[in-house]
Length: 384
Ligand SMILES: Cc1cc2nc3c(=O)[nH]c(=O)nc-3n(C[C@H](O)[C@H](O)[C@H](O)COP(=O)(O)OP(=O)(O)OC[C@H]3O[C@@H](n4cnc5c(N)ncnc54)[C@H](O)[C@@H]3O)c2cc1C
Image 1 (cartoon, rainbow, N blue to C red):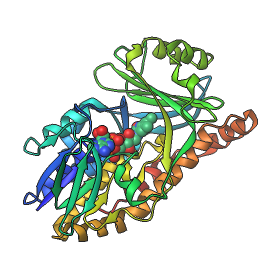
Image 2 (cartoon, rainbow, N blue to C red):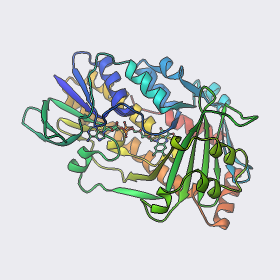
Image 3 (tube, helix red, strand yellow):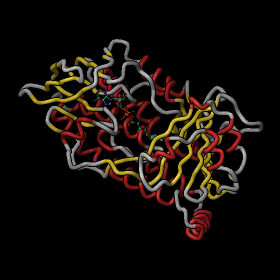
Image 4 (cartoon, helix red, strand yellow):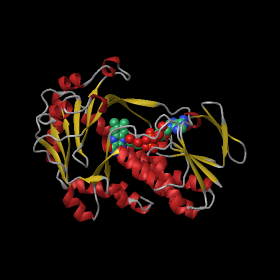
């Protein structure tokens, strides 16, 4: 029996690790459209539920070896005044977990890939179309070549060709803000390498996430009425410095010390939660099933959870199509909540009206820190 995993992103690679662990009898292959394996994006902030899922599939220590365990997370205003703070050390102690850690995407990819040396990863194989042949799936590639497989796990990301065909009514939606991401190889002076932060201005936000080895991952979100904005496409360091002028230190310094070729630009998109992930012998997983805006830092975490859950279900159900249906049952509600909450949080974080933003900051300063611990607890409440 063969399962073809489409996409060598975090979801696809983690799924291959989970399936290797739980069902070594199943033949696996990963089919990747890009000509080379490269992790698109910069850094990632991951939460307690990701580390629990990595633990289930036996790669927790390997992932932690390239990660920076974060001791604090703060939401600040543009002047650097605290709106909300989370003491991760206390939460980690109380919940016996690692509630927040960061990793460079390329490091995570390398570590995940190293766990599956015996799984073939076929590059430059962009899936163009697929159809059932009664006993499995026929896959057609962009170069018109074809292959056949028994089952497909489509982990082909937010622009999934599988979702497009299986759920034609599900359309991408633009969140109303766009995002630049970067990595620096240097640190500003007196920089706290264990604390991440997000600074909320009016209609713009700047995030700072320290990585390992003296690197920083940063992101900058800006309200822009329409997607694919030509002005944004033309923006470089100079324009970003102008946009975030007036933000507290070390925002300008961090932008300034970033090599221009280490800055990426993407519009922020997701799609409204869908009713189905399982379609007979085909399963949607990761962003292909439930892409979310990045406001909760949960997109990759959910893909990692998906992989661990699917692996476990395949020990309970010998037939993948039965496991796929059970996966849909278990994962639909959890991911729906994340997608919806993240969408709402984005609206709050990107407020551009000074009065509303002031009220928001005032209200958030009143929220006790214990709420943050409850939120981590809720994230840990996963059915594996
Ligand atoms: C700005 C931003 C910041 C984010 N920050 C965080 C964060 O801090 N924490 C977090 O948990 N999540 C974060 N996310 C979300 C996270 O990046 C995604 O949820 C995660 O990468 C999804 O993994 P995936 O494997 O499902 O999809 P992807 O990573 O998109 O991988 C899909 C793979 O499929 C391949 N592919 C696509 N189409 C085809 C095809 N037709 N044929 C063959 N191969 C194909 C692609 O080349 C790619 O390798 C962020 C997202 C954004 C946009």
